[in-house]
Image (cartoon, rainbow, N blue to C red; front, side):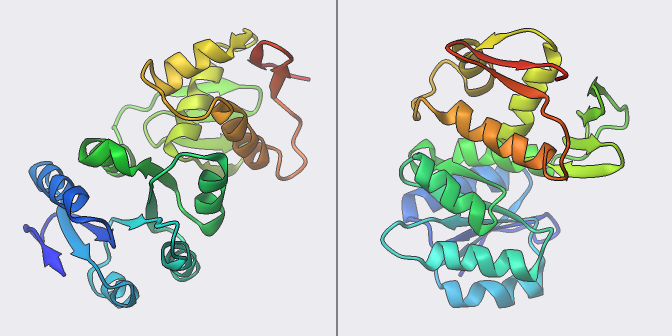
Length: 231
């Protein structure tokens, strides 16, 4: 197990990741004020989490083995509020679904290396701003400082991409947004993933918003894209 100090800063566990990913991530995380901890032995993780209480655990998916997903499930069962990021070799629908169903909060691609991971760490662990800014639509309230969704009196946690997608939709209420516009504004010009990534994340958002029989607010416009509207 390798630790780059200072221990007074939040711990970020890097579990079973390859050496090049670890080296780049350790440098970036330490420079940003975090304490990266490299753990190669999965059996150590649960005890180390209990001992050090990390702010986030980053786990290699490793498709050849089930250890990554199994560890994710164990962590989620033992610690409901811990942040878990999975590192994927391939960005496929099956991979995304497997990770999120195992309890991961989000995922990054191994090929993107440390800077993308640092972006995720800063997104999830950045301190809340003192001035609140919110987007509202129907009975949905999206708090831009905490990055949480409020549905009536219920608080719904969102992954990074769920938040960005919902923010874009709620920023353009009742406007039909093409798939091209959504990909450009939420995923960026250089997106290289599968073409149905929007459908996957719209499905995740609908499951969270409509879990208690709530009416549908994100509507599909066949052959075009999506629109945020009542009924």
